[in-house]
Length: 555
Ligand SMILES: NC(=O)C1=CN([C@@H]2O[C@H](COP(=O)(O)OP(=O)(O)OC[C@H]3O[C@@H](n4cnc5c(N)ncnc54)[C@H](O)[C@@H]3O)[C@@H](O)[C@H]2O)C=CC1
Ligand SMILES: O=C(O)[C@H]1O[C@H](OP(=O)(O)OP(=O)(O)OC[C@H]2O[C@@H](n3ccc(=O)[nH]c3=O)[C@H](O)[C@@H]2O)[C@H](O)[C@@H](O)[C@@H]1O
Image (cartoon, rainbow, N blue to C red; front, side):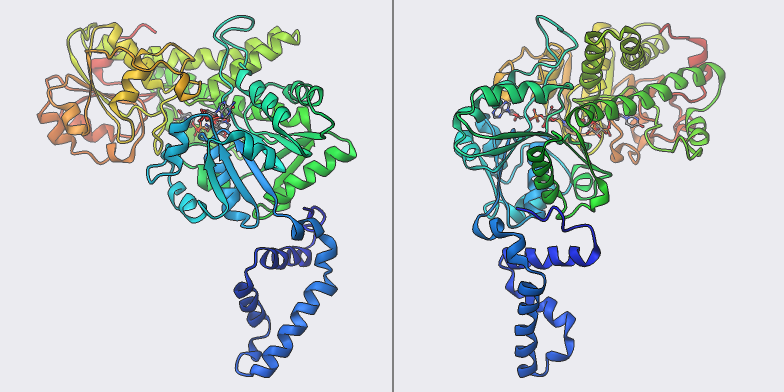
C-alpha cells in the first residue's frame, strides 16, 4: 500500500487516479483518459499509437508509479469486517465500490444475516444500499460466515460488532458491554498468521484500544498488530449519502512509527474518495472520545429543543418559530433543532450512558450528572407525550383504540432500536389502550418483539435474542394508515414518514370516533387544516387547543 504521501498536491492526486486505473486493470478507462488528453490523436491511428506509448512511458517513469507502490502491484489488499450490521454492511459496501482493487469480506456469526446480505432482500433497509451492494457483490465484496478464514487472510480487520449497555454486574445500566468485542479480538489473535491492522469501528469506551492491544499482544505468537480507532458517524436513513460524502473521517492511532504507518494505510483507503482535508488523524484516545462526544452533543441539542417545547406549550410560543430564530445564529446553526417525542436509535442513549460511566470512573460526578440530564429530558418528553394523550381523552384510554402511525425511530429506516414508539406504546398499554400500529418498514413480529423485550436486550446478535416473545393481545399491526385509524379515538404520529403528511385526513376523520384526536409527535401535520376538519390537535411545542388547555397534563 502507500499513497499516503501522494494526496497533498493536485497533480499528485491525478497520479493516484492514474495509478488506480492501472492497478485495477481498467485499460479501457486509461485509453479514454488518454484520448481526453490527446483528442487530436483519434483520427490519426499512427499518432494515436505514438502518443499512447509516450503516455505509458510518462506514467511509469516520470511518475515512477512502480517504485512508489511495489506492494500494491504484487498483492491485492484485503479487508475483513467482523459484524455485518447497520455499520459493517453499508460501510464495507461503499469501501468496495470506491476501491475496486481492494477485496472486502464482511463476516458475521449470524447465519441468517449473512444469507440475507447474499440475497435480494438485504437485512437492513437503507436508501441506495441495494444499488451499491449489487454493483460490488461477488466482484470485490463478499459476505460470509467463515469468520476465521477471512480474518486470517486480511491485512486490515475492521471490528463492527455490538457494544450494548451492560445489564448485569459492575456498571449495569451504564457501562458498555465489551463481550462481543473481546471475543472478536481473541479470535483475531488466534487465527492470525501475518501482521494486521485492527480497526475499532464499533463505538467503544475511551481506552478500549489499550485493552484490545493487550489481548492481541499477549496472544500474538510474534505477530505485529496495530490498533486504530476509526469511529463511524453515519446516520441511518442517510447512511449511503453520509458514507459517500462524510463531514469527516476520523482515524486515531499510536504516535509511534508503526502506528503512523498504520494510520497512513487506512487514510489511503478513504483517500480514494474522501478529500484529504476531511480525514482527521489524532491520537487513539481523542478518536475514541470524539465519537462519544459527537453523539452526546447531537443528543443534547434535541433535549434542549425538547425542553423548550414544554415551555412553548406553557407560554403560547411556537417551538418551530423559536428553533428557526435560534438556528439562524450562525454560531448555533439550523440542524438538529426539530422538537420531537424524543430521540431514539441504537446509539444516543447507549453512548451517553457510557460517557456518564466513564466520567464517574474518572472521579467526575458533576460532569456525569450534566450528561445524565440529556437522557432525563428525553425520558421526560416521552412521558409528557403519553400523559398529554391520556389526560386529554378524559384521563383514561382504557379500551379505546389508538392508532400508532410510525414505529421506526426515524423515517427511511426499518430500525426500531430504542425507538420512542416503544415507550409511548408501553405507556398507553399501561393505561389499557388498544393499539393499531402501522409503519411502512416495520413488521408485526418486530413490533411484538420490541414491546415484550426487556430494556437493552435488543442490542445483542439476533440469534442470542429471545426467540418467541409472548405477543401482546391489545396490539394489532396493520399495513395501511387508513386501516389503523378506522374507528380509532385518537392518532399518534411517532415517525416522520413523508406519507403521513399527505394522508386524506378528511376521510380519516369521517371514519373515527368523535371527538377525534391527533397527537403529532413529529410536527409534520398541518395543524390549522386538521383543526378545520374537526380534529383536536396536539403538536409538540405548538400553541394548544382550548380543549387541551382545559385538560392539563401532569408530566
Ligand atoms: N447503527 C448505527 O447507525 C451506528 C452504530 N455505531 C456503532 O457500531 C457498532 C455496531 O452497530 P450496528 O452495526 O448498528 O450493530 P448491529 O447489531 O446491526 O451489527 C453488529 C453485528 O455484529 C455481529 N457480531 C457480534 N459479535 C460477533 C463476533 N464475535 N463475530 C462476528 N460477528 C459478530 C452481530 O451478529 C451483528 O450482526 C456499535 O458499537 C454501534 O454503537 C456507530 C455509528 C452508527
Ligand atoms: O452513532 C450512531 O449510531 C449515529 O447516531 C446518530 O444517527 P442516527 O441515530 O442513525 O439518527 P439521527 O438522525 O441522529 O436521529 C437520532 C434520533 O434523534 C431524533 N431527532 C433528530 C434530529 C432532530 O432535530 N430531532 C430529533 O428528534 C430522530 O428522530 C431520531 O429518533 C448520529 O446522527 C450519527 O452521526 C451517529 O453515527
